[in-house]
Length: 297
Image (tube, rainbow, N blue to C red; front, side, top):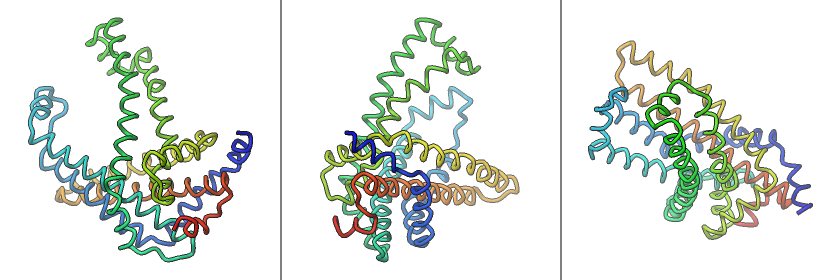
């Protein structure tokens, strides 16, 4: 335990960030191509469907009618499933590409994509286990909190308090979300461990838990910084999309912008998770990045 704590102190945020952008810059055609195919196309399809099927979310009746209509939620379900599968394939493909590149070999688009496609059942299982567990934790905390608000204020009053930003009802919510966030940090390198170490799904969860132990706060800082950058970048992207519509351009252009942004942010996030995995193997197990492919290839 003491050795694990000591090695965890060597986890360098700057190393993770620099390795992420080094990998992307060395293989930008491969990374961008995989991201555009696997995330850009679903992102484009989702945005285009929203333009073709607008819903007035300020109108309660319109929202209710949309919610009970299969024509609304069935395409949304299909988009969600396709996005989940595509993200899983991308994470597997880019993990293999990252390790191959760090081993001074040239990653191949077809081989990386084929690897991701061959692991679809296991990858989908990983994503479902991950997010169902987190959702159960969140619902287990938020639902009782909702009942408590109903008892204290009445549900309609509580909703109005939330709408007006009353700190008494809003302040506890982030704290209720923390356990789910903690679990996500514990399991953030499940896919890289599964893909690279050729282990089972459950064992991959155990590996991620062990690798991230004592380093989760630093991983949180890395991913928080990435999230803030993506959030800031979303403003000019949304402005560009609004300007495109304002000048009378086709919604197709806005959907293309949205798809490209989804591909970009997804690419950076997935490569950063792979870089976190590589850094953890290096500082905790003294396995140099260039030897990872030799050991588990």
